[in-house]
Structures are given as C-alpha cells and as structure tokens.
Image (cartoon, rainbow, N blue to C red; front, top):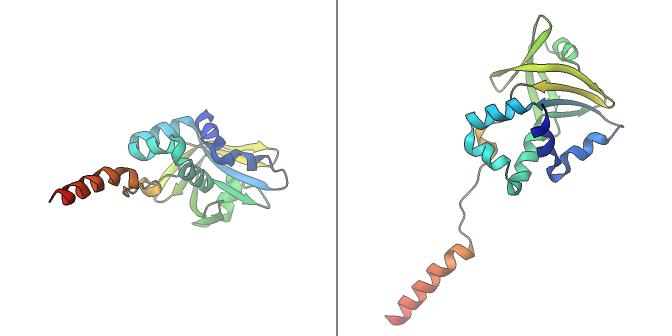
Length: 167
C-alpha cells in the first residue's frame, strides 16, 4: 500500500530522518494508488521521479508531505485548527490545507484539489501518518532544461573548424 513512497524515500536518505524520536512528524503519505494516478495525470513528470538521476526532485516532493513539529497532528486536530485554512511548516515549504470531515472520513484541499484521506491517524512512535489518495504534485515540480554540453557540441565545433580550415 505504501511501497512506492517507501522506495522513493530510500533515495537521498529521506526516510532516515523518520527514525528521529526527538521530533514529531505528521506525514501525508501517498499510497501506491496515488502514484499510479499521478503517473496518469503527469506522465513525463512521474517518469522522471522514478529515475535515480532525478532523486533530488523526488526528495523535494516527499518533503512537501512531511510536517516536522513539536506535536503530531491528527485529522481532528487539523480540522479544529482550521476555521477555513491551516498553514503547516513542511520540510520543504509551507503546506496550505483545508480539511473537511465527512462522517468518519476526511478530505484535504491542496492547491485547489480535494484529496480523500484513505486512512487517517495511523499512529507511530514519533508521529502520525495520514494515507492519501493523491500525491501533492504539480506538473511544474520537475523541469529539465536542455542545455548544451561540450559532448554534444564538440563534433559540431570540429566540423566547423575543418570546414573553415579548408576554405
């Protein structure tokens, strides 16, 4: 259920910080289905996230899901804290969320998208996990620029020099 997030978190040592029992974590963990849905919505972005050379981006996206604080937040506490919107300091940036309760289940709004909390309030020794139906992911999270390198330019430069020498 959480295998994909675990494997991605192994890169760049993201998961290592979760062993720190002196801190309290609230982790909005995307379940495997969330990653499958993300791959359908953002195919090229997700393709890159699963490549080792883009592990820096993967770590940043996972950091968006992790709140490190002096306390862990249950969904009921997040709902209570937010009249309309709650701001949480995530490992990467500020997480702006709205929380709705539907009977015994919850939904979280992030970036204008309502996301069902598949399993809220999973207690751990140093915090709480909320298993999410979607990844906090934007298509713009992974941008690759096509800068020219010396290896791609060298053959062209050589040909230009040879042509110039012959003229």
